[in-house]
Amino acid sequence: MAQFLISTLALQRNARLLRELADSCGARMLVALKAFGSPSVLPLLRPYAAGCCASGLCEARLGARHLGGHVAVYSPAYREEELAELLNFAHHIDFNSLPQWQRYREQVLAHPRTRSGALRAGLRVNPCYSTGHTPLYDPCIPGSRLGVPAEQLRDPALLDGLSGLHLHTLCEQGAEDLIATFRAFEQDWGALLAAPSMRYLNLGGGHWITKPGYNLRALAELVRDIRQRYRVEVYLEPGEAWFIHTGVLRARVLDIFESLGYRHAIVDTSAAAHMPDVLEMPYRPELYLARPAERTHAQDASAAPTYPAVQLPGIHYEQGAEVGQKAHSYRIGAVTCLAGDVMGDYSFNTELRVGDELVFDDMTHYTLVKTTHFNGVPHPDIALLQADGCINTTRCFGYEDFESRLG
Ligand SMILES: Cc1ncc(COP(=O)(O)O)c(C=O)c1O
Image 1 (tube, rainbow, N blue to C red):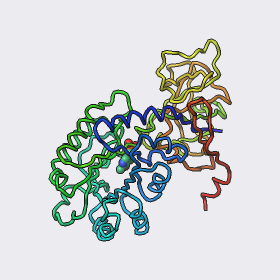
Image 2 (tube, protein in one colour):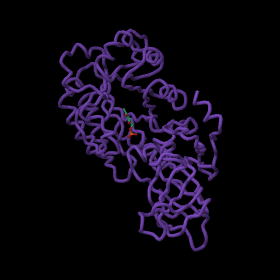
Image 3 (spheres, rainbow, N blue to C red):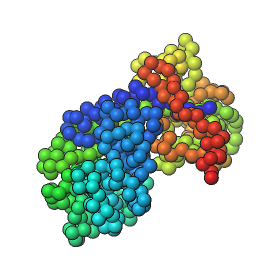
Image 4 (cartoon, helix red, strand yellow):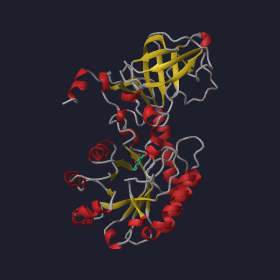
């Protein structure tokens, strides 16, 4: 059975770095639950995170229950009953459009939690400044529905009652792109941010803070500069940065055969059902062949310790290379009927065998939150690798899970 395996030690390594960064500049560091939100893991992040960023009521409830702290919510639109419930426990509610803000303004401002200062309302703005490389993940593309562009800022009275601004434009990017984006944002929105009623600026997610080489100092300087000049609290809400290189998806080879010029290996998982970003983004995941270590296979002690993100003792991991670079090439495909459900083409020094374990690297973020039971492919178990080396399976899935969600 396939398995998502997440390392608690790797999680803590990321979390410590994010906490240190936040402490160094006074940023409030939230966990974007859209990236990952397993209730068995969130409590581990409590000592490090200021709270969560939620995409709506469900994620907000999840964060309040399992992570605690600050609950910041942003959704492209709120349903009436959703907003009514959020008013009771969220701390920031950010609106995506001026009509949504006008629709709920009175209700928000009249709420006792707003009057006491426990709840604040903000507006997501669109700086219309693209620095990303993938249109699917770029909220500044022409025709974007995400955030209010400055050209709509004609009547300042429409903004009465707002005490925060929110922008999210990045995806897997460095501090330099954030700084450039902030400068563009500042030209249009700086005067509003400087208003005495403004209490916070949320700089969204997409910051690759825990990736080696990220310019931590530049980010910290930007946050300090904003806090000092505008006298607002600065929030960051990365998702991926908390979970990058913390987990893998372990799969088994079910069949190997030749067809139409390729050697195919079918595995007991699916990109479409279990790691859809592979097809949506798209990207080629790092893949490892995992076999019990023989003496000739002694682990290379100089290898980067984060590849694969989770390594088990006594196992030799051979990294899959581009096709043709190693002796045996395979097209690694899913156990679904979708023709394009292929993870990629890889080569290995050794021939694959039915029953071999293949490890897809870096599969914690934007995987579990997006999985489906498409084709009835068994959902991988979810397991945690504890600091003492024990593997603790927190969730198994069966036929009932497949059936129950079909209504
Ligand atoms: C509004 C908002 N905040 C935060 C994030 C988290 O982004 P990331 O996981 O890239 O850091 C996203 C991702 O789409 C988002 O849309």
